[in-house]
Length: 342
Image (cartoon, rainbow, N blue to C red; front, side, top):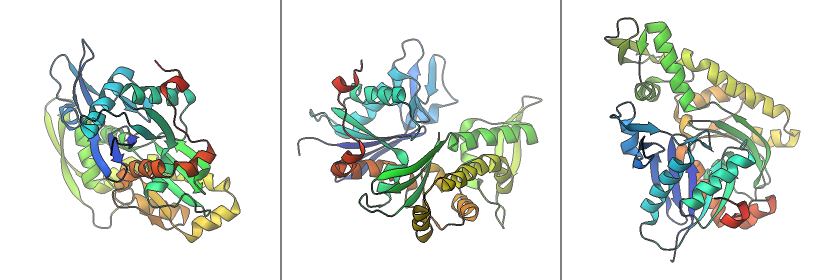
């Protein structure tokens, strides 16, 4: 084997890379720590993630890709190159890359992402919508003419689509994800308990006791932070059902958009979806009760695949094998010359 072809899910909170025939080979936080003076990458991945909120002078930690769009070109390119080199090691052959993107991405955003990937070492790049990749990565056959409803909820966005015959019949993008859940928890603790906490603490609360529907037997944990009035350390006992209240406006917005999308879907596809189950993928699919909330709101059975955060990357791997099927829908590899990048 002379080289690898890569499937990459460049998410807001994590970068997941799959290799054809090997599956997922890398899953790292999409964070970089860099020197603020030279903009040179110092750390990427787990080390940068754990440094957030604890940065020494002259060092800053950011997410260079937010909501599927490149927010800092130089750092995004350095981060992707670092991760690709971890996978490719010293392979001299440049890989073809299939990357997952939000369905609502603009042409400018897509060209910028292709530019980042090629500058990082890709030979050519094909961009495919996250919801389609998630469906393929969950085991949906691209030749299957039946309709499948997919909701891919990540850290930056929630991408939903009705997929049929390897293409999207309907799609919708909601700019709400796991990061917004963290922000809602921070705001709730500040307003209700007078407690200031960092993003890492909010994320821990979400993962440990956060829920989309109220639990019959509530759980709790201690939240540690700073008192908003005195500025001194403060500890508060917080319950899971409190977090459910904090997240409910955002979750209700997601279900409202999903309901509206059904109104635009053909009756035959709605019948197909009703006979099967809705696929819930992405990192936020792991939030307790999220599947039950969607099932109750839409009246559908909901399936959460094993490791839902890996579905988009696995779908990119499937697309690499079956691009001859997707090619008829306009998906193709773009080279540096074709997109006129820097």
